Image (cartoon, rainbow, N blue to C red; front, side, top):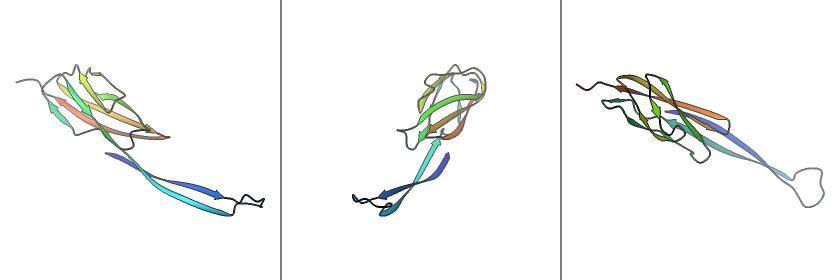
Length: 119
């Protein structure tokens, strides 16, 4: 699982309705934000298809993309979803990557799928 933690600091200036040279008070609001993506556990399968299911935090403001990093031919049915079916797999090892983007932050995680021929 890939996790990033970043600190957001907002400064709020309170001012009077009367004309003054500057703000009456300055308040700092600090918020700790974590973001993570998990591509799932590595698998060994004996069929030509499987489902990849990623887990993520803060899913409302994020975009996702599954890509094949290595291995033979494969079709990713819904590359922009957290959960997608992979079809057309042949015996061998595949690596798939999920990329999560949100507000300038990019996180990735990978999962390996080993397809064994039927005995």
